[in-house]
Amino acid sequence: MGMPQAAEVWTAERIRALPDDGFRHEVVDGEHLVTPAPRAPHQIAVFELARRLDGYVKEHALGRVMFSPADLEFDPQTLMQPDLFVTASRRVKTWHDALPIRLAVEVLSPSTARADRTFKRRRLQRAAVPEYWIVDLDARLVERWRPADKRPEVLEERLLWQPEGALVPLLLDLGELFREVDGE
Image (cartoon, rainbow, N blue to C red; front, top):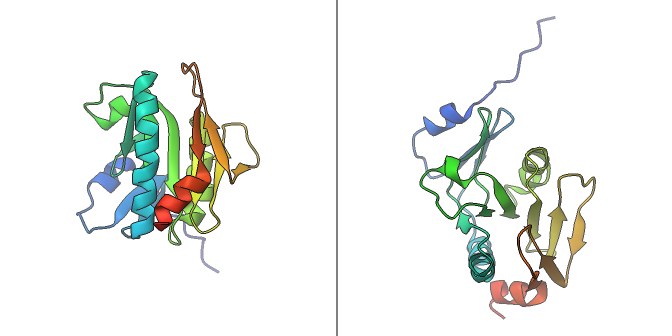
């Protein structure tokens, strides 16, 4: 019987060296993740969330709302591209300047659901990202994760977000968001 083969370990440097093939390449804890271009409803959801977050983030001087593609390198073996994120910095000249982040958001796609709910979630929790939202367009809900959570808070009607430094929370009407994404 042969020796078991060690899993190939990827790095952020190696990911950056890949040719542009139209896919999103990320590495989380040394594991290479590849995803195709997202579907239209996914992109509409990212835009609508960014639109809702942007004014609030600016009004409270919380940083910047940004979205992928973005190379957020948490360590040499972790380079992630959240669909949407809020950086704590207003001055972002390089992706390194975008860290730390206050919020990371992934909108689920069939090809990303497993990675979004496992690898990415665990890594963002270890990085102490205060909130990670997983937006499930099919189920019309948001899973909210915080660093110490063992299970998500599942939100279907509204989402209140009040990051450190904000005097009042942002209220997101999730029903309205999902209707907008669906074109209703």
